[in-house]
Image (cartoon, rainbow, N blue to C red; front, side):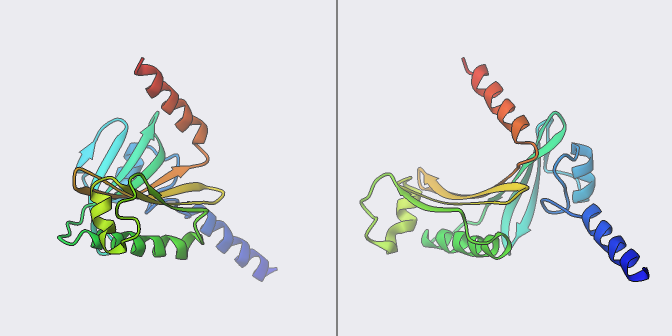
Length: 185
């Protein structure tokens, strides 16, 4: 009986302390996220809280997205500057490996070529990315979250992001997307 009680106590404490993204859980308020991060945000609006941070030894911005003061999405945007554009691909592959170790193989892994001039020359993929000729992306999901990793570029700038969307608040996210689209007309 003592073993059963001890096992249940450990299991319950694990469930209570589970975290969805960094030190946060989906559904937290802005105030709770700021408290969980433990520092003053670099940007704090009604819908977005941003922090400069380091992730996997890379400079990044971590963003928390709120709808009706409810944490629904979060992201990393990596800020490393490289003189060799192919190093962005190496960063992407390193983060892909970390995410794969944690969430398993991606459900979707694509190299989407818009212009194929450099497709058969892997030494120029960084250049192709910087021109917006190709987009690399991966998608993972489980019962709680959808994760989208993306490497893309435009006007010789390469961007690398990882977006986490709560499945629990998917309806709220979709309502907000529709609201945004409708406001454009």
